[in-house]
Length: 115
Image (tube, rainbow, N blue to C red; front, side, top):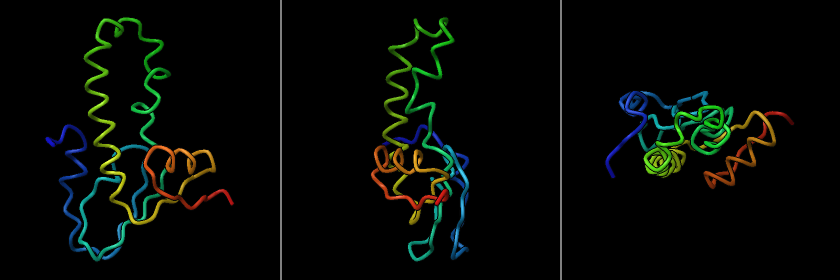
């Protein structure tokens, strides 16, 4: 699949590090690492503009004519977001709500930081 998002994070070469800690609500989970390195992702939320698009765009009526195109672009970005969400070894969620979203959307377990 051709990459359509996160070129900045994907271009970061962190091969020299044994441990990577990212803090994100979007694309930092896409950083590259060595297979034996660990990536801990402190996740503030799933990529909300992709997964709750209606809420984000409801105030922008001028974008409604672009809905068919935006849907295709966002569908592709969602697939890629799920792909990159598999990269971190450990997720730490900042709340039980975010932990549930990580599990539901990304299919990954998350440690809740609000315990």
